[in-house]
Image (tube, rainbow, N blue to C red):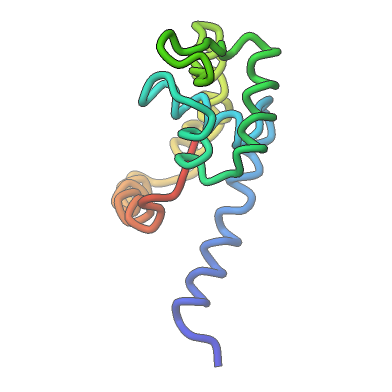
Amino acid sequence: MVSTELTIAGRLREALRPLWRQLASERTLSLGKSGVLARLIEFGRATASELAAAERISPQAVTMVVRDLESLGLVLRTPDNGDRRRIWIELTETGRERLAQERSTGVGWLDRAIQERLTAEERKALEQVIPILNKITKDVPVD
């Protein structure tokens, strides 16, 4: 017998899958890259090990992500003045702009769909679900 929670979880996953697919379809950066940029916006410069811990990915993965982001001009690596072994990763203005573009991708479609397809009552119900979804995803790394 399937528990109610699994049924709800499965139904929620199936309901969110097309939504997620649509929102992600126009993105040009991976979630990992977007996550690193978002972390740098929120907390400022960081080392690779700090980013790896915060994003819950391996140091090797962070190194690859940072290398890619640097090649795109989205981050800058600078040695620490006091400890030349420590490398700081900082967001560039281009990186800030690119993350803003990534975050807004698909939001126009979603806003139109909510306005055009839902009644006022349904929009209110959807808005009331947002804190519940936030509670479920608390402490989960995002972009």
